[in-house]
Length: 314
Image 1 (cartoon, one colour):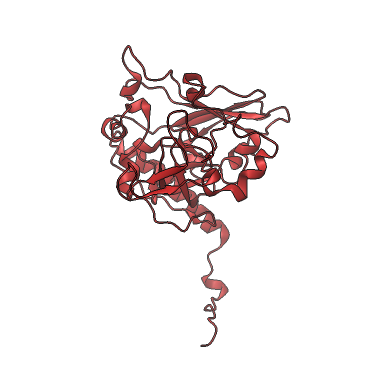
Image 2: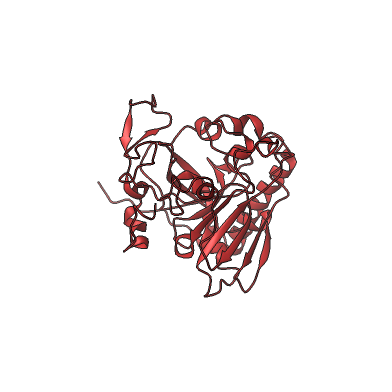
């Protein structure tokens, strides 16, 4: 069989780079405009274009319906179906993310500007600390691409993140008894934040992020438990000392700062050796699979923790 040869394209048929990039910028702006037009309708999602990426896993995708209806997002309630049921009044536009702290060029980025950063579709495993997992096709850009725009100072060692507080739109933030203190806060070491796998996601399944999944922008750190991937981010700060984090503040015995997926370190109340992939059958015992160190990303990220006791630094 003769070898395949790609068809020859005359120069006149090749799209100039400036036009291609203009189209990408247009599609990002169009997605933001679509969200604004949708208003409070959490069921609406605007189409979102992205470049293909080498970052993917050869595993069956979790059904979109499960990804968008089975969530932990306590700002909308503590049950898995609460985010989908209670996020209809949440307005993901207009939106901006402030980047400040130990940077030479602090800046507040509008959502439209963020959507113009080179977007990629990346299929990642997602492992919840509760023992379930998903495979999700995210759309986003490396967190490092944002950090590169603010001139991070040499004295910065960590990155802290903060979620929006809107009790009028997020019913989980209302009432006398709150499940967590607000705002939800998270953090990474700077080298973790700059790792190529760490992204800021603005979409999934070819569309803008739905409200239950952290619209309009969230962190995705696939080698860590899911609660590290903070949702609906409004502030990113570069700091010198390890930042506080919501779940560590709530229960430091059960939730450490690093929270790397580690089958050898159990949660105090359950084993982390196995997981249930959502969409593949029963939870208790049936169809469970072994959990992989660093959620299967050990080859890429294990070197970040050379010399670190991962049991003590859970």
